[in-house]
Amino acid sequence: MGLIREPAATPEPALPAPGPRPASRPTPRPAPLPPTRPAAASPRSGAPSAAPSAPYVRPTDPIGCPPPEAVAAAASLADLERAIQGCLACPLGPGRLKFVFGEGDPRARLLFVGEGPGRDEDLQGRPFVGKAGELLDKMIGAIGLRREETYIANVVKCRPPDNRTPAPDEARACLGYLHRQIELIQPAVIVTLGATPLRELVGVAEGITKVRGQWKRVRVGGREIPVMPTFHPAYVLRQYTQDVRRAVWEDLKAAKEWVDKAADA
Image 1 (tube, rainbow, N blue to C red):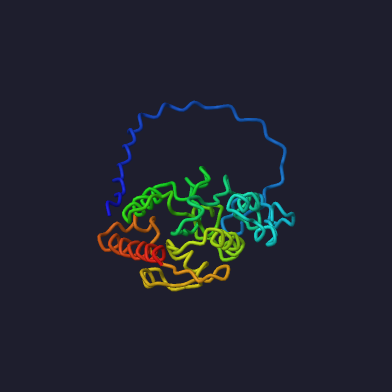
Image 2 (cartoon, rainbow, N blue to C red):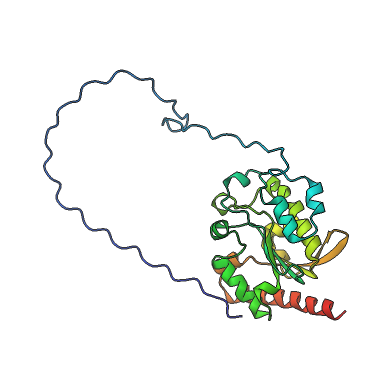
């Protein structure tokens, strides 16, 4: 498939040895300060506690919490993005840099669905643009397509802190947006990348290693769409073995064959 290899880690430079410590001089004792009230101690460490962060409060306005009617009324992907790009309906919203809606051919026959934006995606506002995105581009090219001939989206549109897995309530808050994207695109096949989209979109909670390569189906907008689960490109980068690469190749080849068959029907 011509998949990329992870760059070899470069060793950290050795720190210079410390020189001789200069002789210390006696310093005058400062005048005593007036007594102050000690900070509250943490019950676990005894150190002063940091001020608690403000609790998340779900907004009620139609910009911060787009109503389902506005989502359903969107007649195009551009309309949908305008309707939901100010969304703050889950705790991920206030912490994002950019809302990552998705990109690609609005009439794509092949739709890729990942988990959520990472650091690079949060900076650029585009899905799959880091190292995992570079690998996904090569995976798409290996089946004879270009990135712009497909559509790429995620379950959640805002980056989870430290790239953690989105919580179930965070995924539910965004799932209606993904459903409307699917209704508007009308893909012939969906490829889920990793366990999260398989669980949240398709409702399959089994591990991805057990399920990948096995056709599933999801019903969205009155249409039943075949789904091919495969590994997330980030996992392929971490487990860059011949077996993993062959598995992904077989999964994507099967998805492309289904797309071609649907086009001929």
